[in-house]
Image 1: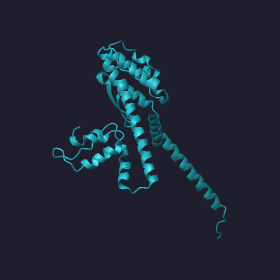
Image 2 (image 1 turned 180 degrees about the horizontal axis):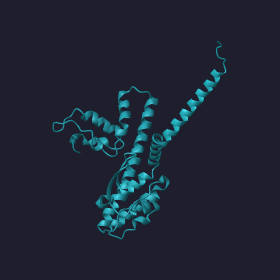
Image 3 (image 1 turned 60 degrees about the vertical axis):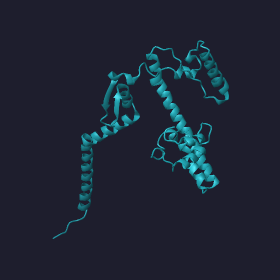
Image 4 (image 1 turned 90 degrees about the horizontal axis):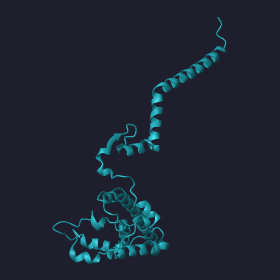
Length: 249
C-alpha cells in the first residue's frame, strides 16, 4: 500500500475491526514516508466503514463520553456506513448497466457477468452460495456456463442495459442546452426532456409567467383597482363633510 510503512501493514486486514486501523493511524501519524507524512485523503483511509467510525473511535480514545453518548455515536456510525454502502452499490449498478455491459457487447464476447440476488438473507445459501459455487466450478472445469439472466429476476433486470448504447461513446448525441428559467444545463436531448417535464421546472415557469403578468397587464389592473378604491374613499369623506352645515353670514 503506497504511503504506508511496510512493517505496520500487518495490523491492517479485511478481518480486522475498524478500531485496529484507527490505532494504526495514531501510531503512523508521526512517521514520515519518503519525507512526507501519511496521506489520509485516499486509499483505505477514505474507504467505507472506516471514516464513518472516526468520531466514535475518537470518543473511545478520549474516555470522556458516557456510555449512552458512546452508544449514540456507534449507532450513527453504523447508519452512515449502511447509507454509504447503499450509495456505492447504486453507483456500481449504474456503472454495470451503463458502461460494463455495453463494453462487453461491443466486443462481441459472450456475456459472463453473473449476478446473485442477496436481498433475502434468509435464503442466502440458496440464492447466493449455491449458484456462485456452481458457476465457479463449471468455469474452472471449462464447462458451459448458464445464461446470466436466467439466475433470477434480479439478474434478468440488472444485466439488461438501460439503453441500446453507451452515451459516452456517442458524441453525436451530445447537445448542451441551458434552461433560461432554471439555469439547469443539459448535455443530451434525454436530459433536456427530463428537465422540462420535471416538477421544479414547471413550478419555475409558472412563477416566471406570473411575474410577467404582474409587470404587464396584470399590474395595470391592480393599479386601476387601487385608484378606484382611493376614489371611493375620497367620495365617502366628501359626503361626510357635506353633511355638516356651513357657516352662516
